[in-house]
Amino acid sequence: MLLDVTDSQLVLVDYQARLMPALCQGPLALANALRLAQTAQLLQVPVWGTEQNPEKLGANAAELRALCRKTLPKMHFSAVADGLLDCLRPPVRAAGGNARSLPKHLQKPATAAAPERGTVVIGGCEAHVCLLQTALELVEQEWDVWVVTDACASRTERNRDAAFDRLAGAGVELVTTEMVVFEWLRSADHPVFRPVQALIK
Image 1: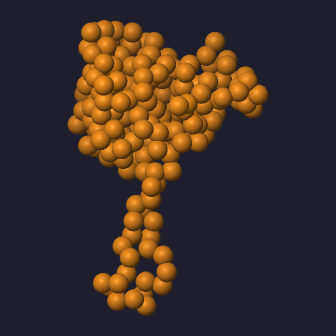
Image 2: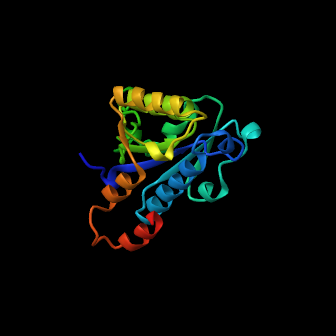
Image 3: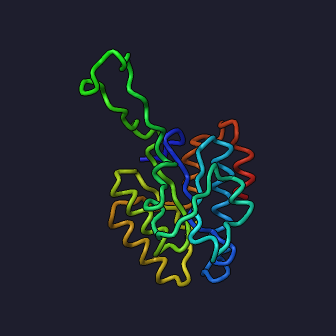
């Protein structure tokens, strides 16, 4: 199964200025998150960011924040608990028909639309805390979750790798930045192939 660009959304978890220096391979994770976000913009994939306790840990890297449709501040480790699903899901549709002509008990309630883009591609920090908890809660909510391993970091490799083991056991697809980018493109004939290739090089 390959990633479908028309079904994808990108979530970038907590690439915060005060957190990054403490992380093992933090600069590489941030660089890959930027590549993903830039590619997503070229391919019209929605990009969402989160920031853990931004008053204490600061904002996400400015260049990354600028590529997100919205950056969600959070206090829970899982972004799902602080409203991520409201970003990922389309707005609730109003009931159709002439509702005024029906008694209230016969009117159809407004219903949430099915997700237009049901695949969440996600990277972030720390892999074993906020990224892990967000990804697992998305799986519980029946989203198709793909974690970009080289866009994730923790303070230690052991914590990061333990997160990947647990995610794989929960059915999450583990991929790399280049896997995502080239699966979104599918062909060297794609109109944005050259600009995307330049981001990878």
